[in-house]
Amino acid sequence: MSELQGLIVAAHGRHYLAHADGKALQCVTRGKKSDVATGDRVRLTATSPDQAVIDEILPRDTLLYRSDQYKSKLLAANVTQLFIVVATEPGFSDDLISRSLVAASAAGITAHLILNKTDLTELLPAARAKLALYERLGYLIHEVSAKADPAATLAVLQPLMSGQSTILIGQSGMGKSSLVNLLVPDAEIAVREISQRLDTGKHTTTFTRLYTLDEQSSVIDSPGFQEFGLYHLSEGMLERAFPEFGPVLGQCRFTNCHHVAEPDCAVLKAIVEEKINPARHQLYLQLRHESSQKPGYR
Image 1 (cartoon, helix red, strand yellow):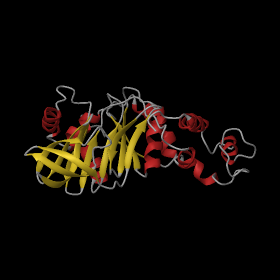
Image 2: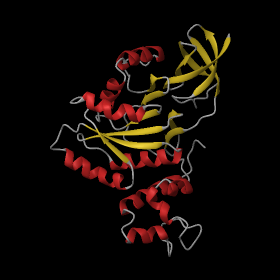
Image 3: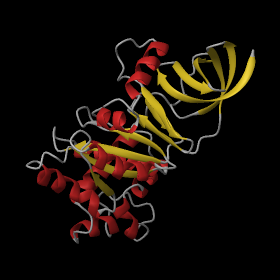
Image 4: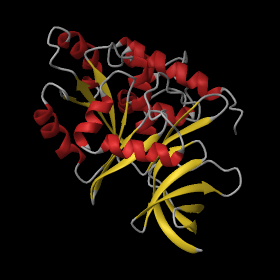
């Protein structure tokens, strides 16, 4: 048996695929631990030419995950930026976008919004109008059309992804797979190989996988999902994850203000002054309520 250092490139349940020393290794953890994420750098012990055991997760720079009241779901480790993929059709969820942005901010990850299918020009104004709120908050929105204009799409995305570890998330149907296939020409072949090694059969969209773009860049594709629970974020983390709250934090009468209904709350005052969107404050209240629940996995 030999010790190696590797990179987790796919995760499915308690089964992982790592790249180490130029080889692809099927990996498991010792015991019942399943706290390994795609993008993790790990120490391994090879047990056969194509299998290994994960001994240690090396220190992470970032960790992106979602959680409900009972469990957490790791999305990716060591990513530097998050691309939230939306499209002119089908309709996209403002709640999912907002929660993803909060998660990215809390994890110290830069977030971008990618508006796909812009060739559907009759639907473009409505999509832009929905995204205007996030643009006003300072988030960058990039318009692409992966299928109708692949060259222009690459011209937009490749410079943004150079030297970065990027994760793509979004609801099903937004064209995320088309973007990945454009960025990684052999992605479908790689997915089949990974699926076979992880024994996931035809369920190729149920695991997160990492593709190397060059020596300094990678992209992680994640399964489409409809909900993004953030039960793990504390109240303090939440208020700091809303950029529009920043200018008034610390200006409330009470130092322990919860920004719910307290007198002389600077956040509530900013809502009246139309400096903070009421819908964003409602999201904060909902997330605060969720974080006050006691998750069963803690």
